[in-house]
Image 1 (tube, rainbow, N blue to C red):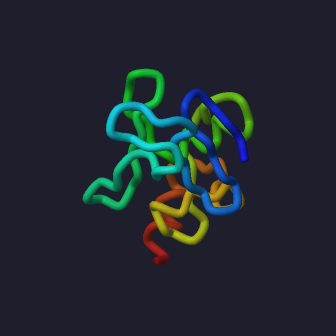
Image 2: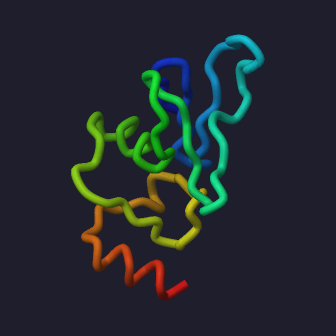
Length: 98
């Protein structure tokens, strides 16, 4: 488990939860929401960030320079073991193989 800001990232589940209660959000609630395209967005540092990019940041300390690929094709599976740096063509090939 990695704490960043008011969030805790669980590398094994790929989920972000709130570390403390703030307003309507209670400690332990899953952070963010899943968009209609299947990607999860989370408010972090006053802006919305894709959960897979935030997971990379939590583990490696910097945002990925390029694209991230969900190896299993599940856009809401943000386990660090399911993410890899990819070129646009690699990312598209994986997206088209599902």
